[in-house]
Picture (cartoon, rainbow, N blue to C red):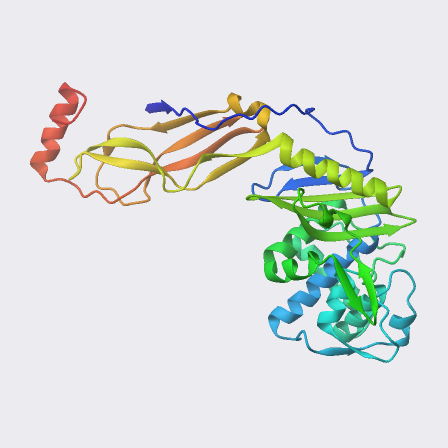
Amino acid sequence: MKLFLLLCSLILSNVAFAESFETAAPQVYLKDMETGDILLQKDADKQMVPSSMSKIMTAYLVFERLKQGDAKLGDTLFVSQEAWAKQGTKMFVPLNAQVSIEDLLHGVVVQSGNDACIVLAEGLGGTEAAFAQEMTKKAHEMGAKNTTFLNSTGWPDEGHVTTARDLAIMGERTIHDFPKEYAKYYGVKEFKYNNINQQNRNTLLGKSNLGADGMKTGHTDAGGYGIVASAKQGTRRLMLVVNGLPNAQARDQEATALLNWGFNFFKNYKICEKGVPLEVADIWGGTEKTVPLVAQRTLVVTMPRSKRREVVVKIHYDSPVAAPLKAGDAVGYIEATVPDKGVFKVPLCVAKDVDRAWFHQRIKDSVNYLLWGKHS
């Protein structure tokens, strides 16, 4: 078995942060979406009141209807008495009016309008209760199995619950499944309807250095103040859920601090990149003497910057490699030992086809390897 130690060329930044983040939020979930690594969690699977963060799933089902062709942005929906009279945050749709789905989406995402949610739920689901059942079913299909929606708005209702992890799942799926729609609506800072201009309650959007581009705030007496926040810096995107804070200022401060900590204290390191040659292997019995070896897939890991120099990466394969070979054939593996995360293994593959040599060449190779340990 031939073993090589890879010397990594990544530079360690001198950033001093605590190894953990002390948060006042009762529920927290912070995840790096590029690698899937969870950076911080606190009671992430404890059921909680989601308040208006529920509207992420309301918007998701609308996006799904639009994508499937069952509805169009220009379609109008009727404003019922129930929708018009709903208390809490409003888009201020007029009673008995016909409102476009596009305006209603802005009303849900930007203005957090309970009235807009009910108009959409009744227009697309028949009744709000039926639409809420669809919301629950879709959440469970995504893997958010600790969630139950009883309405489309997040209005307090005993049994209307979710978890921080489940909300993050819904947020991730929204970005993944509807990237254009997500960007179009969730990053809007204000929206004017019925001559009333309202600001997006997600105050993180105004912080240009943070990279926040969504998603949804929430507040009820039962749930406290919470937010599902997504922010992107470079290739990294973090998904954050916090809930149970005492006021909007605390929510803003805690979310800002957590996102900054996630981006600054941690970094994503590329251990190997798919298709990039890592080693040149000798070949036995082939029409070529050597062949490049490449990683089968890219491996990126998230870790504290302070742990970078503790990573050990090795290449394992038997030399010489016997022909014939097809590009993509696995002949060994890359082994990365990452502090506090364990060992990762990525198949090591040949980069091109190598045919088998004629009989006399194979005999010659055998003799040379026996005598000298290499080709002639």
